[in-house]
Length: 235
Ligand SMILES: O=C(CO)[C@@H](O)[C@H](O)COP(=O)(O)O
Image 1 (tube, protein in one colour):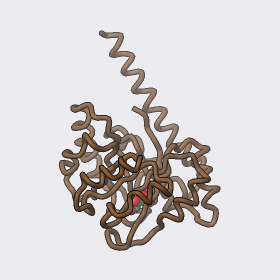
Image 2 (cartoon, rainbow, N blue to C red):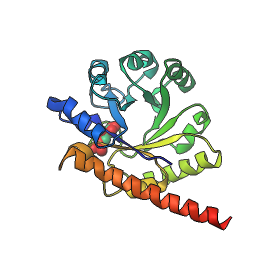
Image 3 (cartoon, rainbow, N blue to C red):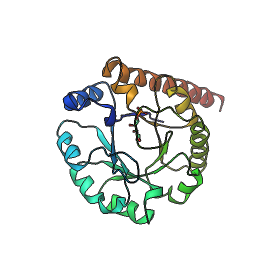
Image 4 (cartoon, rainbow, N blue to C red):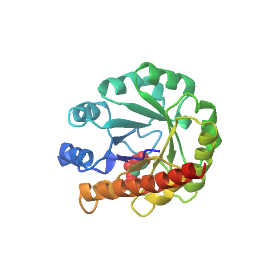
């Protein structure tokens, strides 16, 4: 399994945004997580299409757009035209999730469904053969800098088992309170795309912070390869 870091733009310094994005790209972050908030689905308002369009010219990263907005179906095409590579919407905010997924795919992007901490994991099961990613929120969506909810480990494990039993090619992304201290436990539970805002953009340097995530991913991949080789030899 490949592990991916998705630095969350919300925690960046907007005075030097382009520079900061490039630092995450250079240090190995393949995704850029872009939180769009409407002040209705979540209490806060962040940024939207003009910002995405403007930074598209700066970065080659996969633009992982997380819509924390009501009626996501209204805006899919526009977000893709601005540069979104993947669009994740909230199951709690969509009238007809199937239609949103269809629209995302028709626009040429990958589709993801996100669930808040109080929504049962089972709620995404009916859509797993139609989407590329599930985003498990490990905090209440709306603000950066919150503490990771420990019950998220069990939710990630449950979803990982369900996906693996059915051999579905669906990524599991986790967002909220992700940092160097819990990265290993989160990937051990079965997540493979990790969103991190404060842990990448605040304290120390962006490249050091990003590199620490990359090192944790590499260590996990090497351990997994060793185990797989051992199993092959026993066959
Ligand atoms: O979507 C959200 C918050 O709603 C996140 O993407 C945060 O931006 C993550 O921030 P940290 O918890 O990593 O600081």
